[in-house]
Amino acid sequence: MNATINLENKHFPVLLNELISIISPLYGGTFIDCTFGQGGYSEKILENNKNNIIALDRDKEVLKYADKLKLKYKNRFKFYNIKFSQLDKLKIQNINLRGIIFDLGYSLNQIKNSQKGLSFSDTGKLNMRMGLNDFSADDVVSKMDESNLVKVFKVFGNETYSKKIVREIVKKRKEQAIKTQDLVQIIDSVKKYQKTKIHNSTKVFQALRILVNKEISELIDALINSFNLIPIGGIMAVVTFHSIEDKIVKFFFKHYSEQKNTSRYFPETKYSERCFKLINKKPILPSADEIKKNPPSRSAKLRYAIKTNQNCEFKEFREKFKNLINLEDII
Image 1 (cartoon, helix red, strand yellow):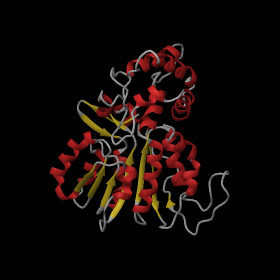
Image 2 (cartoon, rainbow, N blue to C red):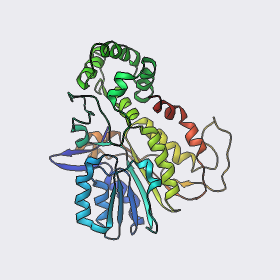
Image 3 (cartoon, helix red, strand yellow):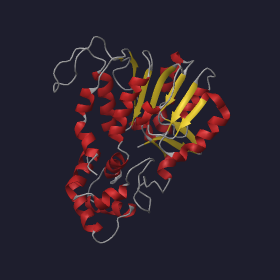
Image 4 (cartoon, one colour):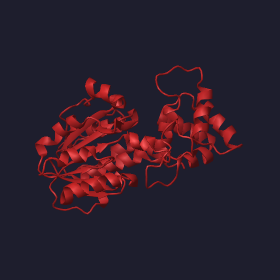
């Protein structure tokens, strides 16, 4: 799901006003934009001349947008072409860090880029790499064994027809390399009698994208590293777009903002102090007006928390999602 959309050459970051209202009491410091994209959040924050931005993005193609902000805001804006899981690699000191923000969606420009192969309408080789990747979607579809491919589609995509789709993929790849349009045709042939509001290929494409970009482990590492980096009183804010990533963010904030574990699967754990303070227990959703202007924003959820304790461990967090992390490592 894309986080931003470009209508009539206009860029619309999702939940922008809501995000700004959350961090505005902290104005006068540095914010880390972990998913720079086209720079919508960064530029809005920089409009206040007391603010600084450190921006990250794994996609080197966003450099053209970063260069514009460098020119416009000079010393108040810095950009790094790294994964957001590598936050702990940043050499930053004495920057008055006030907040760390994430927008986990994909922009329309990325989806329209046929070389990335994120769109169902692309005709070329399967790719889905967002930058700094070890393998592509083509590697997964052409090389992964049948049972593991079924797991990927079922777990990361919640695809009911995983077995049938994979069976057809295995047949097809013995005859020829499977390109984007071939995969779409295979899925359509399996689901030809299904009537749903979403495209037949949505779930499989989501699953491949999650695996190729290791979105689960990237997010988990990034949240932990963000906590370790930000000072007490700082805000962490995350915009999610699908149920898996939202479940991860929800657990991270909720579990560590309470005095005891929220899951019956773990023994009770007492903390001398909560790690987070939650202002809103429920996510902030786009307004009807925003959804009307930008329909893909309908699946967005904004969650945020304020850090209250420096000494927290996250063993339960990794354990909770261990199966998802392990599934990302099967290729």
